[in-house]
Length: 129
Image (cartoon, rainbow, N blue to C red; front, side):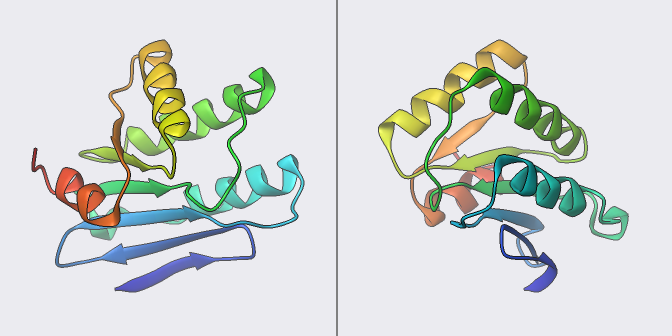
């Protein structure tokens, strides 16, 4: 594995054997703007040398947010990431998180896969059912 980005709010790690990028939202005391800033910085990394790759977004460590402003901001960032990847899997901790991801997928028109374990997330990212 290769760490491509790491700060107190967000990390991005590439797994070359799987051709999977794992972006992890960390539990922190950061404000919404600070967290979004970390996500923007992570998305600015030049990852062309790793293409094509799948992405797993791991949000298990954070409390879910469903306020419209936050969802709009993260939808924009998710859209940018999704245009670069072969598959996009969101790794959640709860059923409520899975339902929220499915709702956001339906609203955005972007296909989002949902997993509740790392094993399942990697299997989906690699194209397994």
